Length: 130
Length: 133
Image 1 (cartoon, each protein chain N blue to C red):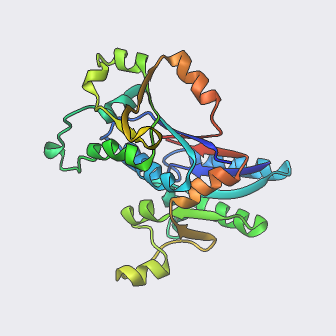
Image 2 (cartoon, helix red, strand yellow):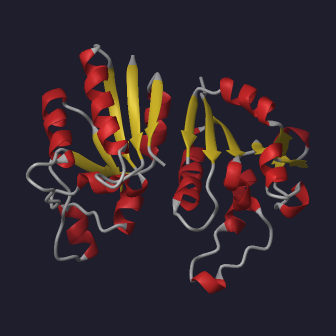
């Protein structure tokens, strides 16, 4: 089955991001295809490479990056939600004249159309959080 | 073939950003020519209340945007009857949302469909994609 995920909550504050990672691993292990993972609302915060969780805790962003590398996942951060919350990549940093960027490798920024398209193209769209 | 997309709105309009960002998804999604419905349940029914005034909280009042949904060809807006009643509201407390039917000489039609919880469950059962906010 072709599955997409929408993640609506940030890391650590809410379990949605952890559940989504575990769901993704389980779905892949069962042979399903993950078409896209779309980060929306505070879910965009999962994409920051600047988070420093305590050493004895999980690093949620790194978990996504590992999964992305292993399975070539399409991790999409909503640009409108990201801009509101100060999540930007290098291109956006230059375009907006900001002095820093924080989006991790493995994630890409794009529009809400990517969420709708994921709903159209996938057999299931599974929403985590909110 | 178009899929049936349902956006479920469950949160009040202010206090959290879910309602505003849900509306942003609906507006973008309208460009994709899918069969779109909205449902307002629980505190989500407050999103459609008339005469919202946000001056005192320093936030943008985005409620006028709902009246433009018809122009985006979003013509099915389900309101859960029990959710209204539990909050002491009636349809008169909500905006009157309409759309113009191209096939009937642009006749103005109601977008809002008042349904019971049980009826809404049946509507949800028919959907292909459900996004809940």
